[in-house]
Length: 164
Image (cartoon, rainbow, N blue to C red):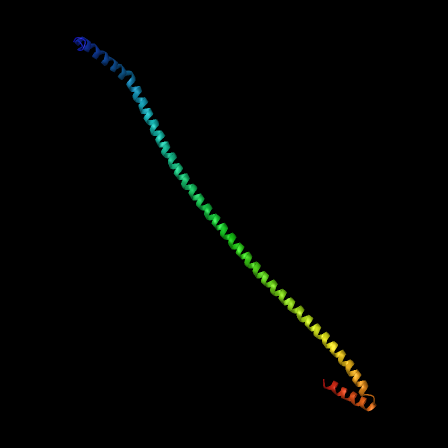
């Protein structure tokens, strides 16, 4: 049983060695270990703060990016709306101009038709007058073989001229 239960001297020397080692560790190693732990804790806190700051900066950048995207979308919509308005205005102006040109062409065509109509009527009147003169001349030659009939016809013609 001596092997299981240690003797009092052994316990004393083990306790003395442990306390001496504990004193040496406290005197020389405890402060550097605490300083290292404090430094590590400060570095971890700094890293956490830096990570939080980076997260905040990322959130700010993301919000700014969203704002810029929204502004770009609004500007794009404005540009598209202006382009559509300009296009509609150009189309309307083109329609108006085409209507004016069409009306002008119709008026010109009517004027040409009227001129041609007058020319055709004048031509017809001229031909009718020529035919009438020819027919009248033939009739008069047949009817005016004597001088009396000729004088009466000339007098009647002079009266008609004075009335017109």
